[in-house]
Image 1 (tube, rainbow, N blue to C red):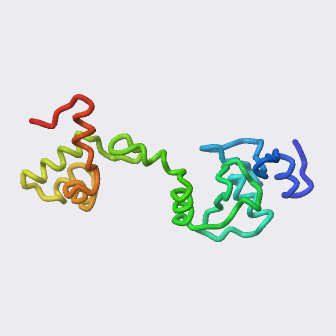
Image 2 (image 1 turned 135 degrees about the horizontal axis):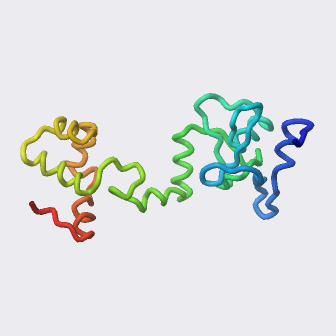
Image 3 (image 1 turned 45 degrees about the horizontal axis):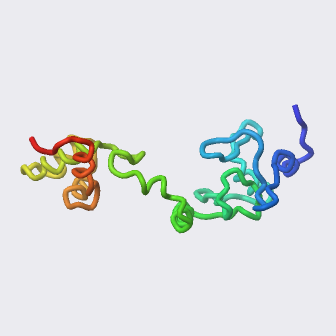
Length: 171
């Protein structure tokens, strides 16, 4: 087992410096989407959060450690900043890193709870006189979600996607 003289040494011995970007790229174990990870006295840490903690200081509860470089394996404290989840999401959108979700709508979106066929069925049930809340309960959705579909604010393309796949919305 490798012994480290201190926590900074532990980070510095396990990085490769990218001369072009200045990123300190984590070389050990990685987690989802390339984020480095490590275990410290039995606690699991994302490597960039640990680096920020060691080189900069405390991470207040509820804050993210965000990357200015957009490199998930980077642990360079000069490339890291604290932000809320909202700020992190706004940063992602501003930099155009959100296309994974933009290109996936309706049932293709990773967080979708219903299929396009079910979205059409929901609208049809409401149009037949069923209340938004009763239809929501049938499908395990909120009343608001059903209302947004019925009024075209969500799942606008359900019928189009459904028919594009060779299906029909009739009877």
